[in-house]
Image (cartoon, rainbow, N blue to C red):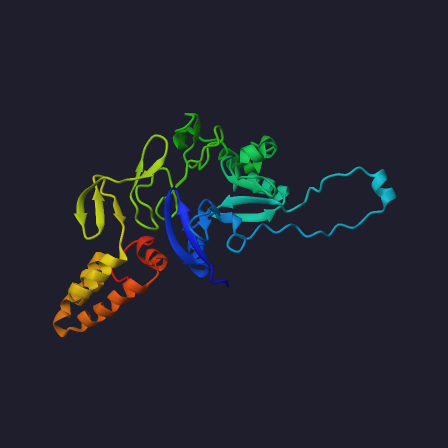
Length: 315
């Protein structure tokens, strides 16, 4: 594994640098996706999937077709193979594939893939709703018999439909992309890059407050009541933004009282430091922690305290 560092940028916010192992960990937890931009120097930026060492390219299907003679080739017209595994489907928050088009048709018949499910074919530029990418599979789907219940899920009912905020057409309440105007309905947290749903108030990964409006999801910046490094907005939404220099100063001067622990939201450790303060052990440990705060790379500090929500006993 290389020692190359990476900066991460999403919606104008830059974090890092992170080493390759740290970036792979963020990718595994879903905090860095193909929607992010990466840069090795913080100046030139590329989409995350342009880095094959982090987002490997899709493997091409093995070539196992027998060679035919020139005379046979002249007699038989070229026909594209129908069983090439080149399709992917986004199911249960995972990308399933590669599979054949026949498998996609089976998933549609079983109700696993609906009209709004995102699918992708190798060689195309972006993911599309299934009814846009393979409309012929939905037109042939049976509306009676054993698969009738699955087919019913393909059309949104009045109880489970909503207007698209971009084109006002009625769509399924569970849709993540409008099949009419192709607008993405799921947005991403500008703090950690994780996906957030259209009615989500707080990012579940980092605790960043999110405000809904008619067209997009944005981060709230309206503090009214301030607690230790936590901003409470008028909508009772919370956002953390910790600084390692501030944490080090608190650890050096009043760390024996657990001030730096309370600052990071580690309430449990803060109480323990406060109780054992007369022994001077917390003061000694806090001095060491202050040195660690000043020497730790900014990217590692952000990954520990700014990309993850606070916990009572986070060290």
